[in-house]
Image (cartoon, rainbow, N blue to C red; front, side, top):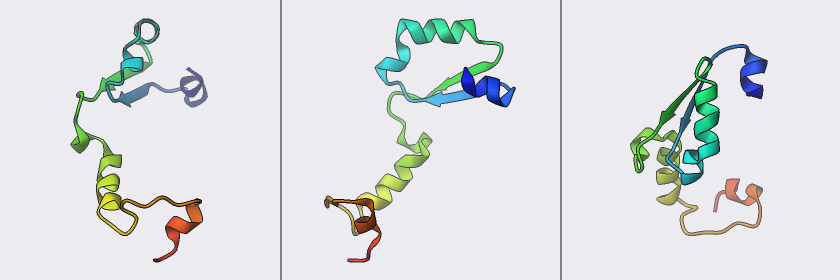
Length: 79
């Protein structure tokens, strides 16, 4: 609601089907705010619709695949 008040415009919320998103409290909030809130729920499994999945596929196949780093700076250094 703070985003809507700050922007002064309608809000479109795109989310995955995480079970917490489907709880009674969220359903009530959405129903009470339909004048300014539109919710677009992604299918249960649709990586092609989620932009971050493309990034993960590149990272998983590259130099940082199967590695753990102690800090973010180490991920940026060439190996």
